[in-house]
Length: 246
Image (spheres, rainbow, N blue to C red):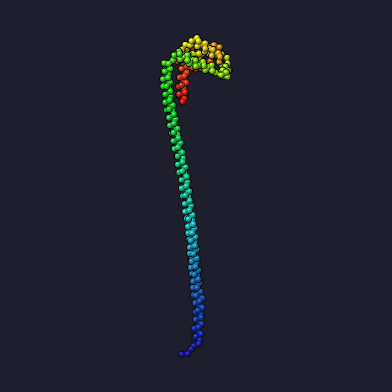
C-alpha cells in the first residue's frame, strides 16, 4: 500500500476545517456560556457574601441595640426602684409625722382634760373649803371680832406713807361721801375713829354708816372707786379666788 499525499493533505485540511468549525460554532459559545455561568456563580457568591455581611452587620447591630436596651432597662428599673423607695420613705415619714402629731394632739388633749379635771376638783375643794370656812366664821363672828378687825384696818391706814396718801387724794380728787358698812352696828367711838382716819387720808365730805349682814363681820369702806375691805366676807372671797386660781 502506497502513501497518498493528496489524501493526507485533504485529511489535514478536513481536520483544520473541523477544528475551525468546532472552535467557531461550538467552543466559543460553550466558552461564553461557561464564562457567563461563572459570572452568574460569582455574582451569586458575591450576593451571598453581601447578604452574610449584611446579616452579620444586622446581627451585630441587634446585639448592640439589645445590649443597650438591656442596659437602659436595668437603669430604668433601678431608677424606678429608687423612686419607689424614695416615695415609700417620704410616705413613711409623713405617716410617722402624722402619728407623732396625733400623739401630741392626744397628749395635749389629755393634759387639757387632766388640767380641767384638776381645776374642777380644786374648784369643788375650794367651794367646799369656802363653805366650811364660811360656816366656821359665821359661828365665830362677834362684835368683839369685828372690833379687832377694825383695829387692824385702822392700823394699816395709819401706817400708810405720805406719798401713798397723796396719790390716793389725787386719784379721788374732791371725794364724795365715804360709805362705811359693817356686819355689826358700830359704836359711836368706832365711828369717830373711822371718820378721823378717813379725814387723814382722803378728807371726804361726809361719812355714811350702815349695817350689811352679808359682810358677816368687819367693815367695808368705800370712797368713790377706792375700797378697803376688812370683813369676813371679803376674806372669804379672797380665799376662794386665790384657791381657785391656784
